[in-house]
Length: 351
Image (cartoon, rainbow, N blue to C red; front, side, top):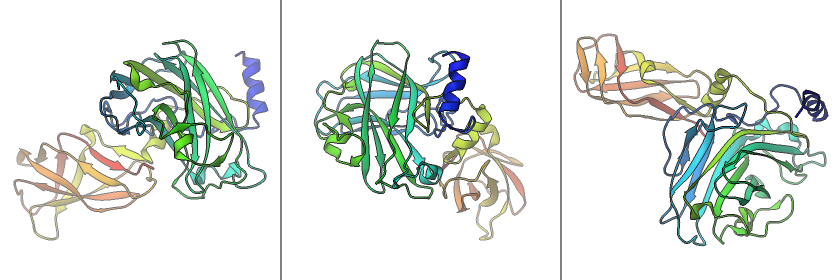
C-alpha cells in the first residue's frame, strides 16, 4: 500500500490515528509466561489456545520469530501429533476477549451500532477455509465469518468486516463482552451452517462452517500476528505500539515477576509464627483482584541462605498484595529483605 493510500485509509476510517486498535498485543510482542503451551492455556499475552475432548491431538503453542515484513513475532500453533478422526465433540481454537467498557463507542444494541473491521496476518501449512466466531455473551449473540488460506506456508493478509449489532448490547463493565474465536478444527457438534450476520448463538452451528478445514488432522503449523480490530469498514495500517506500552496494557490482565524482581521488604508476622509479610505493588492497576501463585525453590534471608519456603497472599487487591513468606528456617523477629530465588510470582486477572 502506498503512503497516499495509507493516509486515505486512515482518513476514510474516521478513526483516531492513535489508539485505534482495540486489540492488545496484536503483534505478539509480549509473552510474560515465556512457556510452550501444550494444553488449554494462554500463550502470548491475551491469546488463549484451547482444545476440547481430543484423544490423540498433541499441539504446542508459543511465541515465535517467524513473521511477515514489519513484525518481529507471531503466535505459533504447531500440531505435533495429529487426530486421526475428528469426533463430533472435538473443538480446537484461538480466543481473544475485550472488556465491555472499552467498546461503548460501538453503540451496540442501538439503531446506530457501528461496523468494525478485523485485519491480521496469517500463515498455515494447511490451505482452505477457516472460521472466526464473534460472540457477545450477555445477549448470547454471534456472527460467524470465514477466511481462506490460499497458499501453504505463506504469509497472507486478511480483513473481515463485522456489521454493528443493533440488538445485542455490550455491558459497560470490566468483563469480556466481545469475544472472537479463530477455529482450527470443529466436530459436528460445533460446525454447521451459521446464520448470516448477527443472530442468536447456537453452539451446534456457529463455531465453524461445515466445510471448515480440520487443522488437527495433520502435523503442521499455524501462525498469527498483526491483529487489529478497529472502527469502520476500511482497514488501516497496523498500529505499532512500543513494547513498554504493550507490556503495561498486558499487565492489567496478568503480571509475572522475573527472578531478579522477586524481592520484597518484610517484617515478622503479627501471629508470631515463622513467617514474614511484605508489600508488593503491581506495575499497573489490574482488571480485577487477581489470583496468586508462586513456586519458589529457595528463599534468601540475611544470615540464612537458600532455605526452602512457601509464598502465599496475606491480602490482595487490584492495586497490590501483602505477600506472606514462610521459610523453613526462622531468622527471628526483625525486618528483612526476603528474596525468592527461583520461579516467578504470578498474578492473574484474565478475562
